[in-house]
Image (cartoon, rainbow over all chains, first blue to last red; front, top):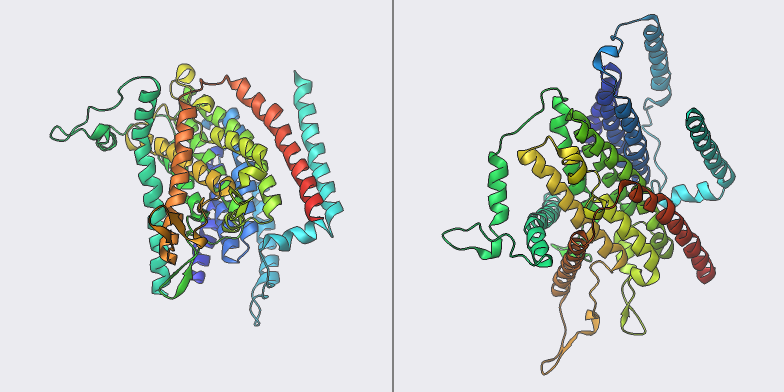
Length: 163
Length: 362
């Protein structure tokens, strides 16, 4: 049953990811991206990583993508102004790099004869993540939030200058 | 294997019937309670062979009407997203009930069964994660309708839900600090017992400010009256669902009612002891003239489920009462309340709680 679910959600994730790239309408692309993130969260659930799955939905699908959609809708580009989907030089480069990355990942993560690495006992538990995050890597964690704060202040500054 | 599947199916069915049943009933309560508040008679016209049942047939009449209404799709909107968004609104509202416990573990067919649909250990966060997805239903509905009022409503809705989600998430951090777990069933278990022998150890007594902040933010998330700016009939027709009719419109209406049930259920679970009975059943129940009655396990389980349901109903009454008492805010007031009043308060609450927990537990 788990294997069946794995294939279902994997197919959903890949299909939605393709939809993001191939669809012309930015709002539809955003919806596909949300679907892809949700399918990824389901894959995390299958791996018993409940907390990561939930955070994936909460932060990416629930917060970041809503903001994306918000901005796309405010811009509301008319269909005619969107460039047609053709295979230009840039896209060819994109496809080539994507293929190389895929090969690299496939070589790195394809299950070996021993199968997948077993997960630790408490894997996925909140304590398992919170412990290292707030003890060993507390400084790095706090500095990351500082970087985000600087980003927000910068964005506000840029938005204010116009007015 | 099959028995496990059967048990899970039963739990899912119970939760769905409970939530949808109450949500259906709420359409009637909304009319009756508002009528009582405004000194009117309220819905009492629908009848079957002259039997009126204090207007209880109105939900059925509504359903019939909505099912047979013309299903309108705007010509220049986005057809697929227009169809999809009512589903995107109602599915998250129903999914969140999976982690809310409605009773203590019971022994059925030789195995221990927890009375909630899913045993995910990050329950509280899951509720917020899934309910944050309901913003899509609104924003996409507004955008796909190809109507300016709809788009305005959608933008208002997205901004409002996004802002209040911050306060909502942070308001329960106090409770999480006190009980030290994200598991809703553990939180409810920790609320058993009494202080001084008669005050139940409910979360609201430990986190009164946290509860008020949670309740306000959750109320704003349901987008009901003082916070119903995304709908705002007096300004933008009907906001994000202006173009919707028939059952698609009903889906939005229903998702609102389901969210109300969710808010009530979560308030009861996090702050009012969830399925914990307000009396100590372990010592038996003392009745005058009858004496002390000791209850068996299954009776206690039944009472616990009933207690949870009653708490939910009590909160629903409160939510209705607030909705028909307060007038609508202005939009800038809603935003100012969130970012300038609630957010500093909620951060202060976390700091004070953290200091107190540190002082007590060391």
